[in-house]
Amino acid sequence: MSQRTLVLLKPDTVRRGLVGEILGRFEAKGLSIVAMELRTIDGETADQHYAEHVERDFYPPLRAFVTSGPLVALVLEGDEAIEVVRALNGATDGRKAAPGTIRGDLSLSNRENLVHGSDSAESAAREIKLWFPDVP
Ligand code: CMP
Image (cartoon, rainbow, N blue to C red; front, side):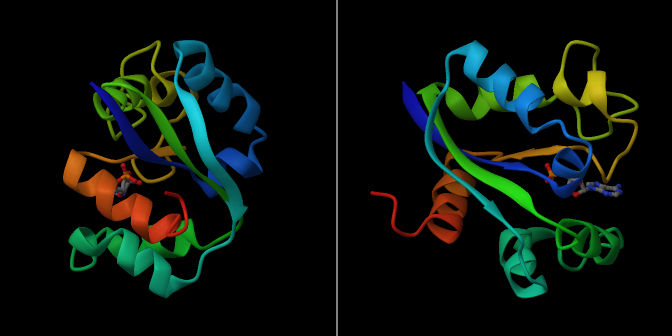
């Protein structure tokens, strides 16, 4: 079933010059780019995006990180896109993520883990509306 998912190439991706490498993996897999924008977000937007995490101990440094510089927000579309993107991304902690995944190949951090992908159909709908309210 074709789905859409919200992906962030976080500020570490942009700082490290990995946008092309990571975008290339999604494109090579066969996912389509429906919307894409380079954006620097403020703390309130971070709070909305990570609403389920704002009370967690790890949230204050995560908030500082995601607002620390430009990121690339995009909507990807394709068959089972939500699960497919999460599989390509790999486990949250780059140190534990499997080789062959984006985080497993390119990240050594639990926080600066390069990418975000929506974790469910409900999250995808909410996040796409938050980041791209004008995308039909
Ligand atoms: P993401 O997939 O965007 O969802 C929540 C983010 O919080 C996660 O990627 C990491 O960037 C960050 N995160 C999750 N757990 C931890 C943790 N234990 N320590 C630091 N950062 C975390």
